[in-house]
Image 1: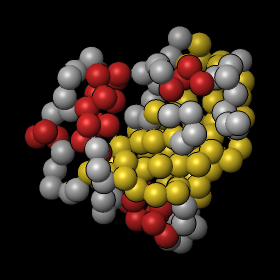
Image 2: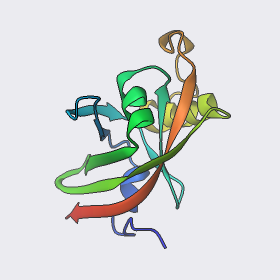
Image 3: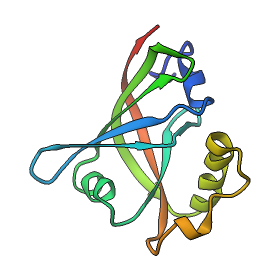
Length: 132
């Protein structure tokens, strides 16, 4: 059974932008927006190796994500958990699926990828907070 309540799982189906918080090397918080999805067990979000969020999560797997319902700013879901791994296989396909959800595009623009390998963060939800 997932800690993510059924009442708020739909936020992963919407084009809700998720804010991911990680812990930096000096203990400072680092927050940035991502696209995210939930497969019934894990929260996933696309990323690129070598960026600050990647470095933070490799050093300390604690992570929090939150999103507000795009049609009701008083309804939100916060998920706290831990990184359980990085998926390399299928990372571009996952990013393309997110591009469809968030932009209505079949494929994430390849010229926006840069030169860093793409990965998908896999997060185990451990605690949730909701409103609305």
